[in-house]
Image (cartoon, rainbow, N blue to C red; front, top):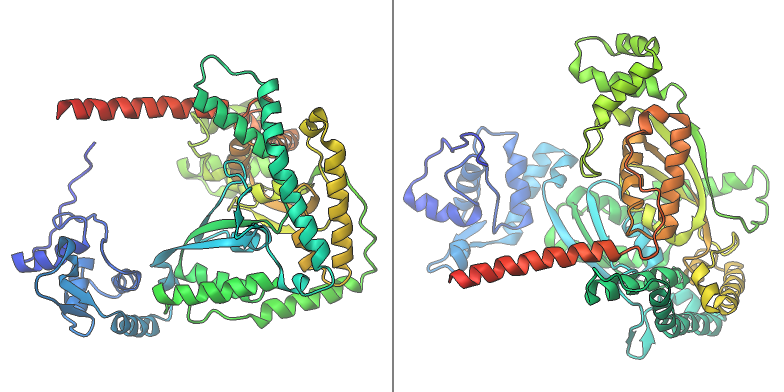
Length: 546
């Protein structure tokens, strides 16, 4: 479907079009994409937007390409003509610096972004790399689809924390981490065979779909036996301002690995976004506040020794008048009345009519990709939970929520996958977890921060999250899907139950899957097969036409 008339009113000579053409997705429309330009140029072009009546094309032509210090024209050119102008990166940076000084606005640093790979970092450090909620999009290697059975130079991929490796704990740490990986590798075929034995192949599924679904389920069962020290890969895409703050937080971390990552990451970002990350450094505000708060916590009585706890989810607080606020917000954009008057009318409205209003606003959603409206952002809930560290890592990636966690320990107990009891591996698993607990306590007596590396994902962690009802819709609908891990599916289902107890009118149309499934991934894998078959058929038709 073609939209309205967005033809560009600008005219350029043939020579100017040849110069500009490689850097824009079109030259005749007023909506276009910037191409073949480094981030510093794109950021500066957009930052100039607000201080001139020129178009982006005109800014590039007049202020960059006419500046021989920044763009040097070269005869001949190369790919698509884009390299017929050679960029002087240093001069471009200096030009950007002048623009930045003139604007004095940090938001300018949001106008350029970069993709960064952080490989062979621990899960513990990955938590800090992915902790930013705005401006950075992370993606991590999945423990569900990737086996952690590889060795590099004869060594399993776990983090060899320098302080531990140089201490008296090194032999215990090394032996235990290797033993965990040995058990993981040894048990994976047995667990995979068990999954197949209890979930026979669906005749409608291909061999590929069945094998993939079974392996994913086996990985789900065993992935939480791996520790916070197992190595992973993180891909990040973000803008300059977000990376600057991420670097500041990493430099200020109490985790030495995070500080080292900050140094390496900063060096690489200087190559792509030097002006954007120039101010990143250790923050005395962050480190000082942490020290003050730790000291203050010690003044309100000694913390009791942590006892093992069963996993729980508690709704700590909510807004009793939240339904009134949300229903009024639903009406607000379609009304000419003040918000106070709408709330008063909702307050007097019969419950049945309230349900009709909620239905009109929410019932047309076809699936979770039809986002519930912003009215639901007027109602907040706070949950505290104690659950395994693996669940935390899955919930942590959600952006539109506030979350804080306590330190990872081996003191609150751990989860035993029921499948391991069925296979007869439960005693060995318990022995392994108890050995991890003893190693943690021994190391934590001298190095409490570093001791976290030896704690498996199956151990319990306490954290809280505060989020609005719109995000609860998103989180519970996404994390309750059939293909999700059973642990966080149960968490999403219970979260929906707790919210529904307080505000049933607002949760009636939440599309949360409350069922349990034997082979979680099989339907998703079948859909992948169907899509691949259609794609292959289409490609074959196109080939036949040639």
